[in-house]
Length: 197
Image 1: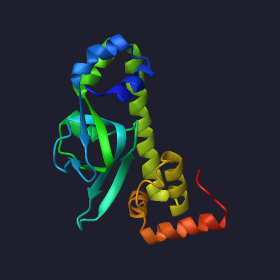
Image 2: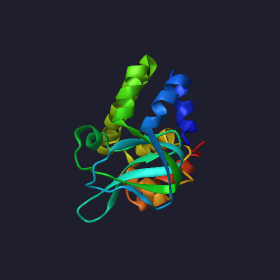
Image 3: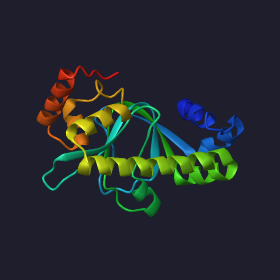
């Protein structure tokens, strides 16, 4: 099973090689092609996904069929519908592949077993959950009260390598603005001599 990036990711957070070997049977990896849907809205999400390679996104559709992107997941990011996983509810999101991706499925069973084996993993998982909640709160705050410029600058801070990996309409969808508004924001920033790193 190919999970080398995920193994390194966990070992950098205190999981030993012996512990990982014991946990490996609880993992599954899969490669997905660009455009492939990994999770449909209404399905039950059975696992979080760790992106070893490639790029995924989670989005929802409004009643008019318009996409609203909730999250991008490049390499070393997790993506999934935690509410669906934990409560066994239908997913609110569609998760699909923007760039061909290698994904590791991280089930609740894996998390429980890893938490039993490793105090480091328990601590890491708790921190990861708190970071997730903090990011959600920040995202809601930005969508409700921040200018388009501030949202765009936050996007660049959060996803510095995605500016040239995703189409502008997807960035606009994530920001909750039109592509035309995004073009205006980028022009205003360019006029201020702002250049993203």
